[in-house]
Length: 249
Image (cartoon, rainbow, N blue to C red; front, top):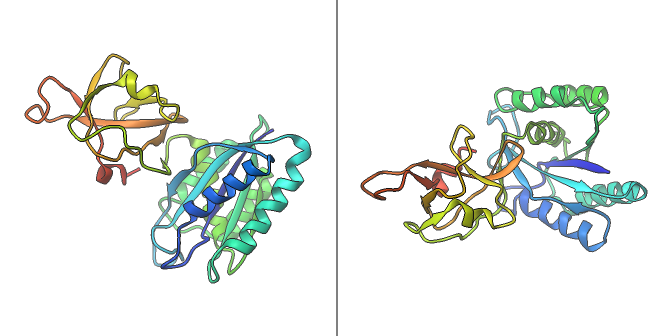
C-alpha cells in the first residue's frame, strides 16, 4: 500500500526545522521495518501576518510503502512521535493520504495551490479532509499545522512544486560534465530547463554551484538548469542553477 505523508509546524524559533524532524521519523520507520520512505520535499506556502509560522511557512512531505497489516502501527508511531518530539509552542499537523484511483487528487491539488497564495483556515482543511477521506490530525498547540500538512499533500500530488531536502556536492563551480553522468546518481531523474524540458543525455553542462539542489518537477526529482553566459562557459549552453536560484522552488 502506498501513502503520501505531510507534516507542518513542528518547530519554534531557534530550534531545528521540520525537515530535520521528518528525516528522523523516516529513519525510525525504516529501522523498525514498518515502512519504506522516499526523498523528502519542501513546499513553500503563503507568508502572511494572519498565518502563524516559525520562519518560512513550509511543509515537508514524503511517500511511504507499507504492508496493510502495518498501517495501524505506522499511524500510532507517527502520531506519538509528533506528540513527543515536536517543540513546545509549535502547532503540528499530520496528513496521510492513501494513493489510489479513488483519491480526489484534483481537489487536494487545488487546495495546495490556494495555500501558496491566500490564507486558509483549519475549517477549510478539515472540510476537505472529510470530503476526500484523508487522515488529518493536529498534535499540539493550536493545531494550525493541519492547514499546511493538507496543502503539502496537494502540492506533492501535483508533482510540480517544491525542492527536495538536502544539498548535493556533484562538482566544483565551472566543472563541465555530461547530463548522463549526473543522471547516474540514483537521486537524479533528469536535468531540465525551467519550463520542464529534458536535456538529452549527451548534453554537456557547467556546474553552477558547489552545492546542487534537486526540485520536484513532473513528479520527478530533477536538477534545473539555466542559460549559461557565453563568456563564462564558451561552447556550453546550460549551467546548473545556483543555491540562491534554487530558493524560488
